[in-house]
Every structure is written in C-alpha cells, then in structure tokens.
Length: 69
Image 1 (tube, rainbow, N blue to C red):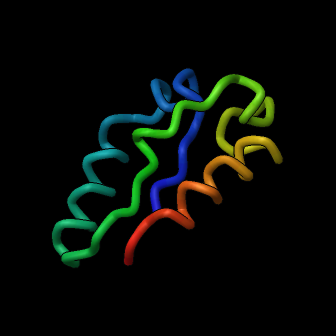
Image 2 (image 1 turned 30 degrees about the vertical axis):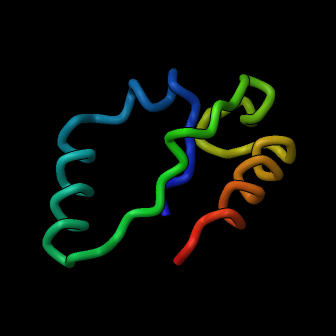
Image 3 (image 1 turned 90 degrees about the vertical axis):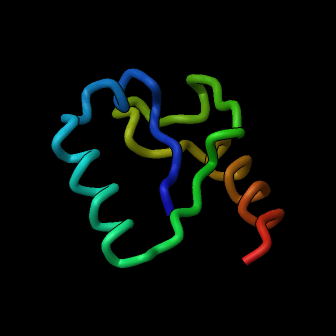
C-alpha cells in the first residue's frame, strides 16, 4: 500500500529510493494500492509530511473501503 505523503515531502525522496521500490514491486509481481485520486489538503498531514493526520486518515480509510481487492 502506497499511502499519500505531502507533495513537499514527496519531492525530497531520492530518485534511487523510488527506483528501488518500483523495481522490487515489479520483481516480486506485487500489486501496489495507491491513492493518487485522493485530494488532500495540508491539514490532512501532520507537520512531518510523511504521516496522515486524523482527518487525512479518515479520508484515506474511506477510499480504501471503496477498493475492490
């Protein structure tokens, strides 16, 4: 599951880590659950940008419940 992070935080993730993650997912044949269509405001993240606030977690949980696995 690839949970949302704040765009500012996401810009700081080194490309080599992104490539490693994507490579492992492909190599292992794993399906990645994403939340790309969920629009989250700054209030949906705690200040570190890497974790959802209660508001964000509630919104993402609602989207997760809609997904068909």
